[in-house]
Length: 327
Image (tube, rainbow, N blue to C red; front, side, top):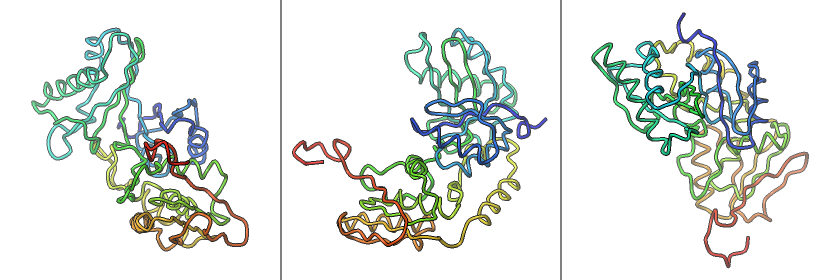
């Protein structure tokens, strides 16, 4: 059976406290939720299913497809178990796709530095590939191609393919970030927590680089958040079904709405912020759905009818170290 059609455990990570909204999203896509933690949920599906999860989830950070889980008392035993996995069926060992990044979380008394685990796992993988084919992929910290993640707690290690690669918060539209921008996944979670789905007006004073307004437009239009991204980790796994991926993208574009039922208004007193927000919204393809205005908070236009006001004000050390400035 192809790895792409093999059902296994999938762990989807998220910012702390966001898992209730991630759970809703996963269930809305008709995937079961087997477990929920503060920063992740557990579901199940095939490697092919991870493509849909990466494309559609707004509050997720990473989609991890489990390859194996085993006992490992020592780094040497971890190496042996990792080396035994059939990496030649998963990873490219030559050509442009032959690159590997390893990440890990180690909660083990033997490990003082997770970089040690990264190197041990990387060595096990590339040694096996070199033993079989005589070739080995390059490796490094960049997550723009194949990524393997290992979670090692006490004497239990679990190995995943990180099918996202770069975290999913990096939608691809924030070209001008300004200072301390709100993370895209968190912005989506805030909007979901408020219960706003696009049927009423959305007012966003102090909009900064526009993340809240852009995420609101994406939600209201039912646009898949992953449509702007060109690279995901799953694209660099052997046998990547590109035709199926293009079908998923095409269906997502077709299902998106063409107009909004209500207004989205974004304002900021800073001209530079509005310029950045406009550029980011244009990159996201939603600039014509958002009304941008330069004005102070109290001058923000609030149209008649139902709606919600959401904003992320500058505050405390996040924006300034000057204790004399009022919050």
